[in-house]
Length: 260
Image: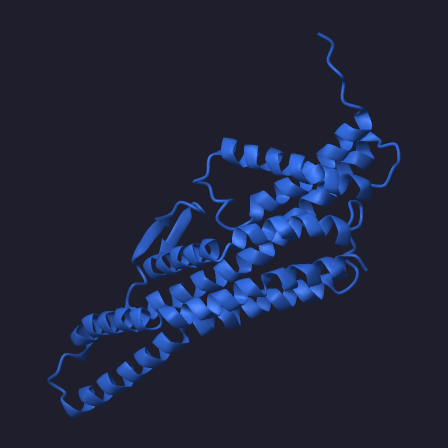
């Protein structure tokens, strides 16, 4: 049986397509976690590459690839895919930041659990909010959004185009700084209640010196925090849905800046 050999130009074009998809899968939330087997990630990369290759192939400039030029182009595509995934991960980092601040204020500073997704220790509240954000991300089909973005990115930013001299770096810095304000928004209601609780306990300590305020504050702050978390889950859902809903526009804006 004679097998048709794949032309070298098509094979090189397929490698370029695979590089961007590999960078995206390696940085996209949920799917990039270490708990996902490497075989599953590899199969997902190859499957999506086969799906996108007919769409992406016309956008690749036709020229003879040398080894060094092909390697640089592959690195370029991996960086583009990784950047798309990192923009989405900023939202999850903000969620973890807000959970860390809450855990520290409520007295859970030393209560850490192992996060299998990031392979590191996280505070208990951070892990809870991270899982909650993942569930919302999957519930609103956020992972489908990345498939659409990956397909549109080849038209908006063809392979070989990667300009960091424009507004891309300032815009990414702006997104990174927004992460801190977003983390405070997640934790603001609980921080306000805990501040009021501390103020009341401070007044009681002055009025009743024999009252052991330090001993009372731990169970009181923990109970108040869990109560407020339960009451504000709907607000957190609205905030996360807003951020995930704006994610596509944010990534497209970054790709436009990279194309200048």
